[in-house]
Length: 588
Image (tube, rainbow, N blue to C red):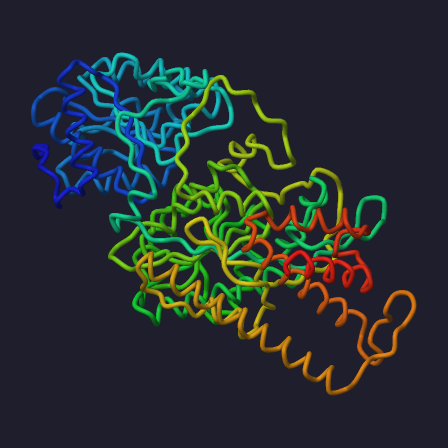
């Protein structure tokens, strides 16, 4: 006999209680549909299952169907439902057509519903059914999916839609979601309950996220045979940005090993600082890179990473084993960003070229689930404008707009989201053929709560260590305070170095004037001189950014307009020095 559903096994959070009150009011007024928007990690599953338990206990519904994006999430829903006395079958297959009477309902995927909507329509009609649509924005992934969801669950007694990221860049309407025109004339989705990241952070429900953005010099060869060098994150064309980004992610270069080593150092600090079971996740673009990153981590951490590949039938088992263990690292293809629910994940490496707001939010959501106050999350990412912008807008809540103009593709358009959730057996193909040659890594900046901290610091330097060594347990205000202190220390040390150099120059007497461009220092390798000049230029750009608020890319672009010459990755020592001199005048 199926046990009667029980009340919530643990006290509800304030937002869950408020959402439950709103649901009761809407349901009492005859509403069948309810959309709850809550930031990843806030507890949407607990809220939804509490609603289900109430409806089952009251006899309003007699069955529950949960629709989730991935197979792994089906099992997670079934496990969570057990705690409230609700038995869901996560192994239901369309070919079976029915399940055991021991179950209160089933857990499905959106793809499963789309494959046989008539079957699920018949099941919905057969019993008074509550349908829980988890991450309902996936029902808009394709018109056929949306149509299938509407067909299968149109007659449902109740429909509860959940999402942590309701916004999409397309105009496919999400089934059973209300859209209303706003004051600006744009029609947007309307939620019945909303709980954003900023509110969850204030309540201690989620962790504060520290983003560590890494830049560096990237070199690649075009299909025409030309060899180009550019600094990751500088103003570049769309194609150059794409190539520099993918060069950074190349496991054979120096950027990925340096960033993985930094992330492993950060993970060790977090473990020593109060989260002894903290884990790390690398989100890779494809299977080949995932395996290569795992090999790098094996050497760096002296431990065996868990590798989760989309075509592996044991993927769910591997994720579950990692969740229950205290292993350090998991490497997964990007499709599992929404299917990984491992609360001990505290360090992430965003090693994919997917740049949609939706995917980014889903990926970062893997690390924000808090288990106790003062836990922090650290996410390492490439220093490219689109990711820096997304990292700086973590607290911005968006809605799905139906009638806004679709933006023109910019190399990484939002169509990539659908690709991001499909099986990835082969490497991404760049927009045009290119060959990654060399890469280097440098901590560019730290982003927290919309602010930027720190000046460029070489990988492995004491300046980098200042940020990697932040305590693992910190309240949000403590994070901001420490970051400001680290930045102040860096700037003070730089001022000390400048003062010392000035005193030495004064003691040495006047330097004879030289006509024309200054030559590279005799006896020093050219690459060292140019490297020092680039670091000084980037430090001054960061200082100007903090003083004026202008983006780094805009400052670099203005310098190029003022001084001429190519991007700094291709500039001569004299051109770099001219930009440094100009920027010092701007900063004075």
